[in-house]
Amino acid sequence: MITLTPAAKKAIERFIRGSETPVAGLRLTVSGGGCSGLQYGMRLETEKADDDWSFDIDGVTILVDPITHPMIDSVNIDFIDTLTHTGFRFDNPSASAQCSCGQSFSV
Image (cartoon, rainbow, N blue to C red; front, side, top):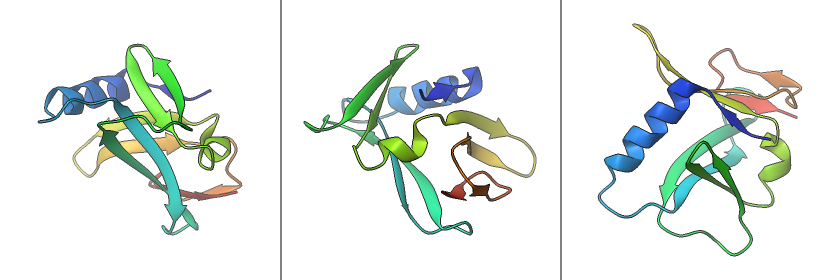
């Protein structure tokens, strides 16, 4: 189960409200890269794909493709806003290693 902190939910809702096009949901992805081998990605989607997993988390629709889903099934997403860092941070208990910034991981 994917979870969002209140700060993450608020930030996502702000990005959705600011979108110039209708939003079907927030897509979570995993791709090769980052300092730990895999990196998280996020983008607003205008359409849901037929094979997407779709989660409603407190009114926010999260879209995940079938390949990404097992890698982020238990991830907790937070939004950090400090003097030195602003952005989303992922805490993935399924990861065998994770970088200190919370943007990349390995399984």
